[in-house]
Image 1: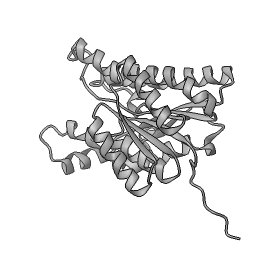
Image 2 (image 1 turned 90 degrees about the vertical axis):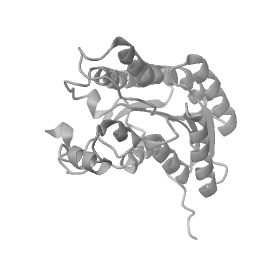
Image 3 (image 1 turned 180 degrees about the vertical axis):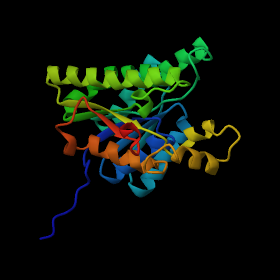
Length: 261
């Protein structure tokens, strides 16, 4: 008798921030294809709803959308409650929403610095703090936080972003140890992509065409290419699944070899 194939995250219930585009969209699609229900949360609620509709065309009833400003505590409480009701629980949290911004320490104004910290770090704090109580009853669970290779390797012109993404890196470890100590059976890990071909690259073009920018960035990567969204989504899928049940407090580099130099 042929055994029915189950998806790698069959029965999981995932909350994905920044789900309207880029890494959030790619990861949500992959999670749904592999059996998870997904709630796409984004400040662009219309965009999140469009992605959810796209997923539901292929995987009926598997995707939902909510509006979420990740810097606002009240928004987090409402969005998680809505997702919990829609999916019947939450046991995967993908804190993916983030922005770039600022340049050198002298040229970055304080408002920009604070905004980058709020979107990139405060959001992870709020997400973990308020999602964990929903995740405990549905354990085993997995928290996946998007840091960056820039959270491990500094640049002279990335003061705000370096600080924010390094914060995500160590916050992820603190959350991992907290959950382990409490016996929650919830893991927490950070992922560290380098240049990935998503809309965030558009803000880096500065007069160049997208093709020129991609060629320029690829020269900085030992593998000689810029990553694709699915390169990150496959890592998210692995961390969301029980295949990674013994991995917590880790940082996974998705950087084409940059950190090896």
